[in-house]
Length: 161
Image (cartoon, one colour):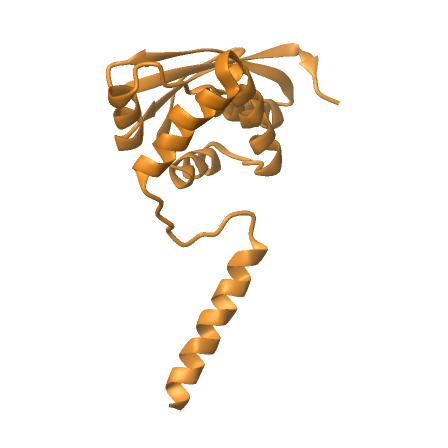
């Protein structure tokens, strides 16, 4: 009985620690189908033609709430959020090109031709802006087979204060 009580206390302490973090570190799962219903059907029905704009700015807002100081942190966040695998493909003087791939991306592209990745684009633009210290925006996102390419452009002349 004593060992069981100790395990329960350890478990409670772990839960309390996780609640203090911006997002928990243990793996969580949500049904991908439920996520897709909300993301690709319900929100566009509610938001109509403003879906892409609102999603982009929502992504920027999420980035302010969950700042990611490095590329590795960004990649982890994307996986944890169920957004897919983020890979930096090209870095130029004032732009970055990322590839977003994985089962969730493939499924969204396959099931809904009009699906949008503006949420991810806004999130990424805001994160790059914070990391680089220059204003940044997602210039475009485009579908390539089972992947999405996100281009982020930042203005080296427009330094954040």
